[in-house]
Length: 364
Length: 105
Image (cartoon, rainbow over all chains, first blue to last red; front, side, top):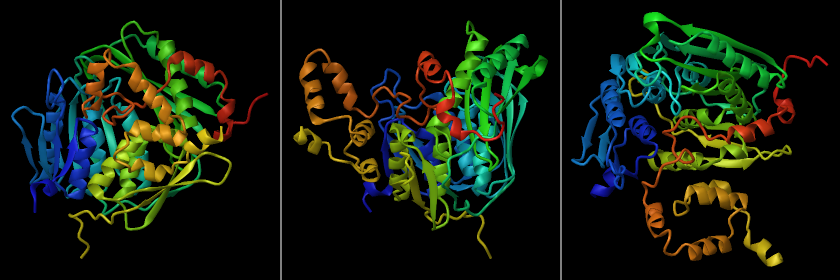
């Protein structure tokens, strides 16, 4: 075998976590080259190395080779073992950055996942803990992962963090259920969490006011909880943010989130999250854009059967194309997009599962 | 007129996604029928010297990663606040997406 075909080779720092996750699920070794090779600080960042350490901890037999300059990584995956582990997240990335990829792996593990993440719990770019809890875990539930939870023990706002989050996934399944979701998500209610650490509780209520004002035009029930954290459990820095979740009776969720910085007006943050939610609803078919990778990957590793998912034209953006190209590189499967014939521009993504089975769940 | 119309052939998105020689951004544009070839050519002629360096970096896989193309950024792209305010002064356009509470008026 030539050296080029031993690895699935990627270039650049794009989709780093997802590529490592896909390698682990498929059992294929990957090589990522030219990671920020033109950058002033070339190579892997501290949080990416931290993520690789986490991957090493939850698997058995993984080997990671990082080149001297850090611009090339070879990752040979082991089997997913899970277990109890405490991960200290660097302050450059919040716990969501590390917890989110774990959701892809946890149900297919040998032992139950119980990981304690320490660090920052909210940020501008990565998944917040409320988004994972109310936005991503319901998706997993749809695929048969019923017992998963993210417990917030302490909140910690940037820059200093000091939060603590416990990810528990008790369902160990052989493979995800084949799913057919052909109807647009009809929203029956909007819920939300408005939280703060080490600031006046009035900020939380002002955010709720701002969001409610915008959502008045949405004809459904709006219920936003105030969640003020004080004292030792509120981390080391002041901070505040809002997560809004639009939900329907079938258990689908569409969500948006944001956090405030010093100098931001709470009403504006509340309003902007509400606007984002409306925009996301208008753009989404069954799931929102930030839930698409999880949904599609679960469908890809499903039974050798065809699953269907309704998406909108707006959801096909560059990120979507990159996702599908990466999936094809690792798993070798393509998905088919067919237009729906009901006066919309929506499409049905037809996805054939690769027939993945949890290696630890050999049926006797 | 007909000539230009024919040029803009209808692309099949399922195939376009997996054409590795086309950058994702271009693939989306072609699918939407936005980019026609003349546009691209003009671009190349316009910036010969001035954008020499930027062009060079554009071709590398490490070009400034924006949230348009990287899943490492979890929060998707949204228009600016003011645009959104304008668009969503009422939620009438997505009224059919809500069920439940009947309107009070």
